[in-house]
Image 1 (cartoon, rainbow, N blue to C red):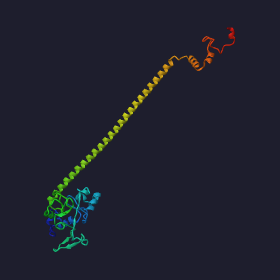
Image 2: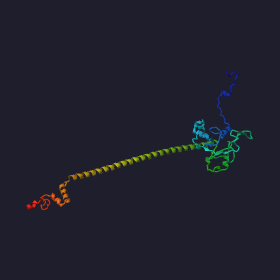
Image 3: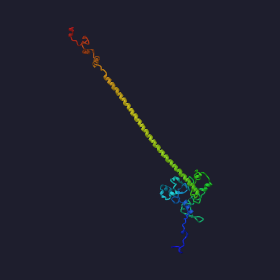
Image 4: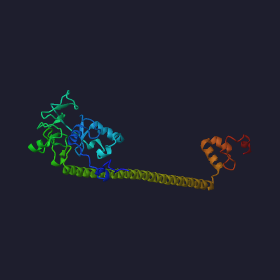
Length: 312
């Protein structure tokens, strides 16, 4: 039955209370942010890249994520805003002289205080402060990484390493813990994504307009060829008709002249022959074919017999 004197119930057993959120150890969070890739959770190795929110990634992990987003289970939560390798900046880091090949990333040394500390791989090239999360670090659009204190001590609008110009708005803090800084970075990212969408939309519209213009040009060319072919065919037909009409008119003229020539009175061929014969033959031969009525017998001296002399 219970409550018979053998057991004493506690308050948390009788009253339901809200469970307290587990507090994350700050040192563990710093180690995770500054020594490990935010996406693959593996130790950071060069080449190292950073996004517009200031998180650190291994470049090969980002490439794998872009090729196959299902490979990382929480990739959509961590780096959903990264859709191209162009949206991350490759960092130009200065190696730490204390971090050698023998002292690998997993090695631990004890400091004078007695706490175990990881050896950071990189330092600021100006102040030589270690990039371990203890100090604030930033990177410029060119990819050069400095401590925030170095940029404050040496104010300039030109990068101290590569001499490339930059604006103060282009400076991005790395793994910032200040909520105001995180909000401002998120606002910048949102603006960048909106501008990117607008540009992509404008590009799509421009491509569609170009395609429509090409189609219109092709149609115009087709119509122009059709019109030219039609005009050529009509001109060819008209020229053919003209030639046929001229040919028919010539035929009609020739036929009319032939008919007129047929209707004409032909000359007497016998007279023509006689004239030709007279012109070609001599007088002696011509006298043989003349009639007695045409000329006197005195002219036909070849045809007269001897009896004519006696008759006379």
